[in-house]
Length: 139
Image (tube, rainbow, N blue to C red; front, side, top):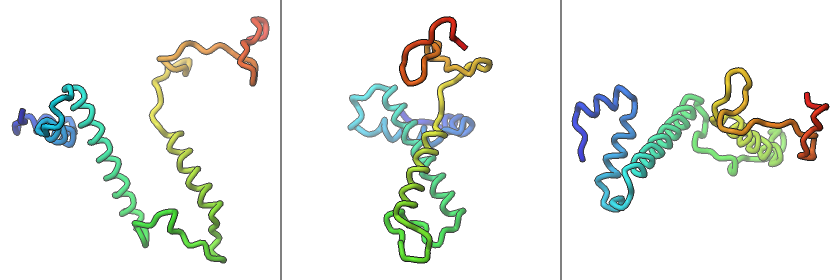
């Protein structure tokens, strides 16, 4: 299966040209003959998303104009007088991981209650016990 220029125009209008290009590559690769069309499509989508993420990081690094753009945390110089310690750098790395978890996409919530749409309704529980509150004490 090959895509025509009309197909590419449609993909461009939807802003998914990377998905279409990657899907075509996966279809033409004989190693993927055993995969279902859904698996091929999802692989193409994952690859396109990863490509966008990498491009975004590279763009942000270029825009930041770091003096050494390819530097890593492992290469930091901890000489005295710089105010940088290994403990502080580990804290920054953990903070970055925390932000990544905090900013990850979340499950849709109900506009009024704020509860997740795909979860069972929460029942109030006593702190640290997991035991439901008695009926009279419910808030």
